[in-house]
Structure formats: C-alpha cells, structure tokens
Length: 371
Image (cartoon, rainbow, N blue to C red; front, side, top):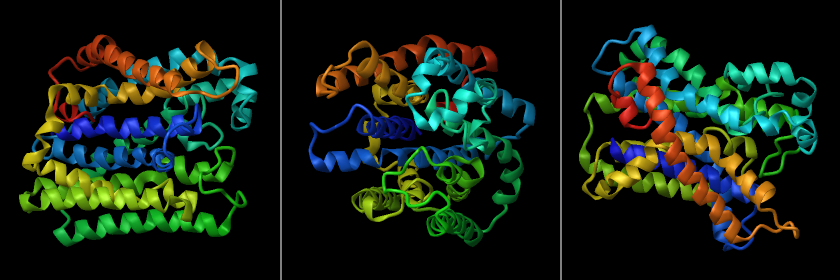
C-alpha cells in the first residue's frame, strides 16, 4: 500500500494549493493552474474515502477490541493534533488578530468553550466552532466520528453481498449530493458563490458536520469490503485510475458551474474511490509511487496537513510580508518548502516516537498505509 501512502501527500498538497489560492494568491501562475488549485478543498474527500478503505483493509483479517482500536487511533492522530493547537495558540488567543476574520466572531466572544471543543476534537459538530483555532483541524474532528462508528459498522457491512456493497456506495453518494442540492434550493444562507463563503453558518453544517460527511466514509467502507474479498481483476487497475483522474479533472474544470455545497461534499467521492481501488490493485507502473522518499512524504502528510496553513500565514503575512500586499512566487515557494521540511522533522522526531510509545508496539498495516 506504499502508493496509497504517497497519494496521501498529493491530496494534502492539493489542500495546500487551495489555501495558497485563497490566501497568498497564485496570480503569477497560469489561469488553468489557478482553476485547478481553487478546487483543492476536495482533497479532504479523498482522505475520508481512503480512511474507510484502509480501516476495512487493516481489520479484515484480525479481531478488533475497542480498547486497542482507540489506543491505536488516538496514538496516531492526537500527538500531532495537539502540537498543531500549541503552535497556533498564539494566534488563536490573540483577540485583535481574530477580529480581522468575521467568521471567527463567535469564537472571539466564546473563547473558553471554543478552546475546549477543539481540544476534545468535537468542534465540527458546531458550525460556530468548526473552522476555529487551527482551521484545518475540522476534518480530524470529523474523522473521530468515523472512528467511533467503525467498530459497529464493520460487521454488518462485511456481510453485504457484492450488490449490497454497490447499493451502499451509490446510495451514500446520492444522499450526499441530495443534501447539498437541498441546501442550495432552500438557501438558508442566501446565495452562495461557487467558491463558497466561510462566513455563512449553514454551509458549515453541510460541508463540515460529521454526519454530513459520513457518506464519503461509507463509500470507502464499501470499497474496502469489495477489495478484501479479492473479487476483482488486476487488469481493471489502470482503467480505474485513469477514469478516476479524468472525473476529478472534469469536476475541477466545471466547478464554477456547480453549487459550492455540491463541490464541497461528496461529489468527487466515486472518482477518488476509483483511484484508490486502482492503486490498491497495484498495476506495474505505480512502482514510482512506492519510492521510499515519496512514501516518507506520505507518512508525514498528516503533520503536513495540520501545519501547512499556519506556516503559510507565518511566512507570507507575519515574518516575510510584502508591503504591497502582493505575495510573489519566492515567498510562496519558501513557505511550501518550510512546510514540507518542518513536517518531515516533526514526523521523524516527535510524531513517530510518541505514536510508538503510546502504542507500545510495532506499526500496523494501517500505519504503514499512512492512515
């Protein structure tokens, strides 16, 4: 599963491109690249689908106890999650800084409860706090919900027939799209531009609430059950990857024609599922994705994802600002390089040692796959 570990980094990097596009800016890049980067938030959908797939793959051939499961999961995610809160705390507790962002108004006046919800990793259940403190942590809050459901979903879903798994996957995707369309039609926030608006309350419910994002995880579970049964043809690997990539590019190309709620939830989940399935079948050409350096980047992708937004802000707006307000390629490349380098160091010297210590044992298949 080395290739799947590598593509985790690509997905995290895609999210970084989105934050550069929406923050420092990519005006110096070609228009097509700006369009591509503007859809980088869809990388989170890839993470959600991959989580379901890896969970089934990891526990398909061994018993699962709640204590060992939660110990492994918390050891995997909480040390780096807590570190991300610590390094971003100076900005979060700076009231004057928060006042610059209208979407942080509720957090500014309810600092204590907002901090507690973030520490407990339940901030995504409340739209006012979903994107507070270290904004990208909302997806970890969603993943915690998936973790809590997996031990109870694993057995029933594993007994589904092949047709039942298809129905689950397709049904979950349809539900995700229907919810997004209903939001668009009801318009509780009023008209929402294609690029979205984090100031709006109900869009956070649709795009950041754990229940709203559950269909993407269910698609991953269905895919994982299909894969571990071995009822597949390796000749499908390359066509699946190509079809998935083509669908993603089509979604990016036509994104401005689609409501933001549709884009920001499970629209591309089937495309990412196809890519994951194709790579898991290990066609011969993916050996380059299993290069040790790329796999290392994939292993550090969780830390990279948690810290990249803060490092971008720090480099481009605090340490190395441009008086003109225009952030050129030099500053962006410096920030990206620092994000990658710092993530590798944190993974090697902080995240990995703490995880091993908390687990008290060697890494599992899940860890080796980067989940």
